[in-house]
Image 1: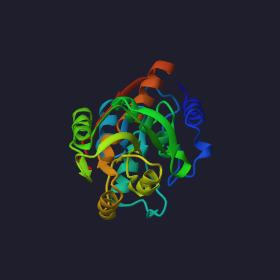
Image 2: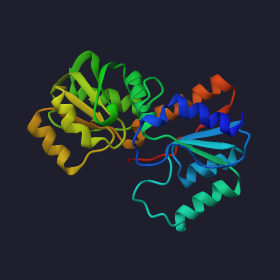
Image 3: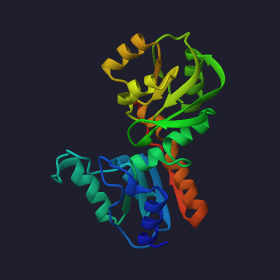
Image 4: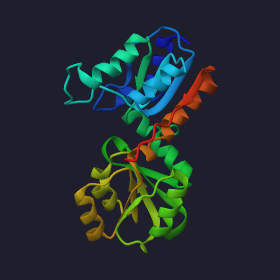
Length: 248
């Protein structure tokens, strides 16, 4: 598949033009023109790039790429090594941040909800990134923690009352603790995201809404996997997902 064709397809599929984001979405580093094999991962770390080299990949597809707003623009140190790996081996880097969070079928939030069996009912937050829905069966927060741990392979951090009854739930993968107050205003019993901040504890205690931090990486493995599987089925590309361990 031609690089330009894949870029057009992904940009259109994920509707990159409608998002205000903190980094460029799409082709971030240009490599060889023909793409047959893709390595997918959450973040374009050196470990993922090394895995792409070992697999003779033509492209790397990630959720967290490079060139974040406010980042030092100098190509030195670790940044030079990462870019040198891509450029020296003629490997393309595609990255989709908010567009991959928000996609209604392949996105991180859609996939987390599907994995957990949550029924989506609506959206909230900036650019409708957050999701709201219902559990299949009401449960206690402490039991929901066990369900998440079993499916994500990581023990969540529970902030709030463990015995709190949970039926209506909001979720937003990654570092979305800043959406907690908006989730509370939506009348949910629980908000699930990847990370927590110091003030998150107080919001959970004072509002009575449980906050579950399930891990930034752990909550965002599924969108890029779904996107990679879609590309393999749609275009016949060889796609490997590489899960670089990350406890955060």
